[in-house]
Length: 163
Figure 1 (cartoon, one colour):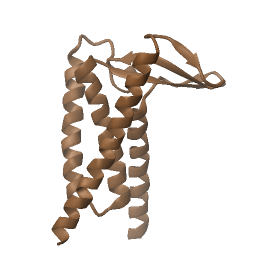
Figure 2 (cartoon, helix red, strand yellow):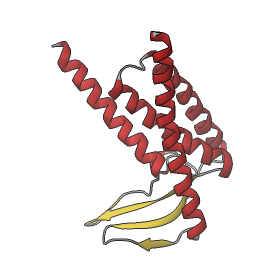
Figure 3 (cartoon, one colour):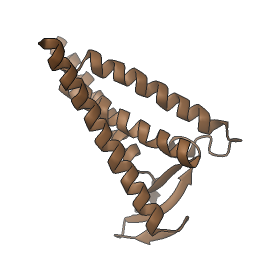
Figure 4 (cartoon, helix red, strand yellow):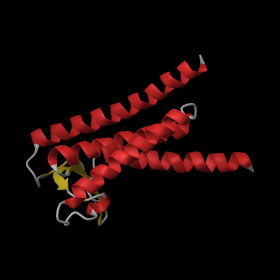
């Protein structure tokens, strides 16, 4: 009975990751259909929708490499997804931890899909404020960031409980 509950919980965590993947891919398809590459459309005084491509990793790391980075980052993303799936299965009862992992899993796979399908990641969210301009990002990147923040919170809570 407990094993069946763990399996159902594990599938729920995978379902959350799938929701992230779907929202990421649908948002990217919408932007691809609405905007031309490189175009910028102001939404507010601090936010634009843009269509840009990133052949690298975060903050365009290795974007100008010769093309090997597509496969390296795809392989890394798939490896991370497999490891996260293992952790989700093993710790499916830990809600905050698994929520964080599911967000990271969905985000990582959303960007892997882009790399494999297009050869680059599609970014479109562009924030700027008082001379600060963040690199454009997407729903997958947001999920990964939120998941990382939740992992830190989960670990801080775990440390506090052991004191």
